[in-house]
Image 1: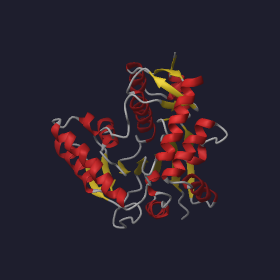
Image 2: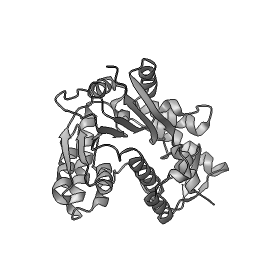
Image 3: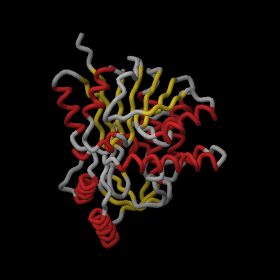
Length: 311
């Protein structure tokens, strides 16, 4: 039996243990991060299951039909939220599934806790928000979905101005319901990242964040990037699956890349950012693979950049 330690989390995030804030350390202590690495026949069964799921998968991201799927999905969270008496736990996205085999450090692992993936992500998110958002006044989350991450931001930074943007109305309704119910300073907006609203203003003391959102653009990220470059926010943070960070000579990584491409998730975003940096248009602050993810892929990679001012 192994356990994810404070040092392991720091290594995953690309920092040192001393950079982990006290409330983050407390969260690590409260959760069960024990696990065992699957080997031999157990591992083979997982690999076979993953291969079969990839072959049978018929979902393709970025199609027109996906808008209806997301509208329905976030509406389910909205209804659950209302039925539960506005319990914030009802906003956990349904794609974070409890009790699953997950991947860690290019291995498949079986956690002791059924909420291992959610708990690991919660530690990472708390560290990320503590590390990078103290100096900004306004935060825009594009592709905010159920408002799950905005809730965490509002609890950490009650005095900041929060905007949740998504291309389906059920998401906007959740964000505005959160503001109404809890008195948080947040506003929901309809926003299509493939056809950005040029009337949306982003002040230069703001941060932009996407979490599992660029992936859904199926490679059509250029309009959104140009929108951001035209607005010059102080910082842009993306937590996204990034196929270029896999080592495809490793079986576990190879299968994740195969699934990524079968679904049609975005590819080329990181190389595009690197070209923009070469052109002097942006500064890349951090690129970090967390080496952690769900059964089929790693959705938690960290890309941080800021526009360069050339005037």
